[in-house]
Length: 198
Image (cartoon, rainbow, N blue to C red):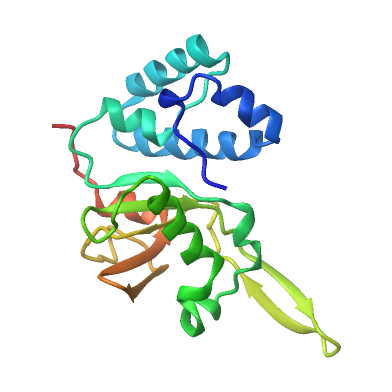
């Protein structure tokens, strides 16, 4: 399910509550605060939260609202449908990447907004924390997620990987007319270290 950005929909807080999406809203709020805090933009967090509280009755932050207030950020971020990613395993990223719920969520998210990932840098933030389960009669171990994967991002921004600035958890896949990089959000933010609002 793709969620519209709240500045364009006065009743969004009611819709979220009615559909039980409080967890997704809280996740996006935490991700936005993480990004903006990293770049010293706490005043923007306060502005977004106060406006949301006034308009919708709840003080939460969205990437769409942050995008309206900060200029020159190198990519457009959104939060993907977290629930659909629970079935994804690490081998899926290599064997059948374009058929994974992760790739589908990315494609659907930006298609719904009319954004072409080949034309502008975009990123989908999602949770994919590490877990190990056992399946089948033999009890085969199945690994899902990434250690430290509470905040992951799949993006089209071309950034040079650097051991001292980024993180080792980084996978680049070629899809259609663009490259998709999957890494921790903190790893991406480290690679963008030094960015300042225009």
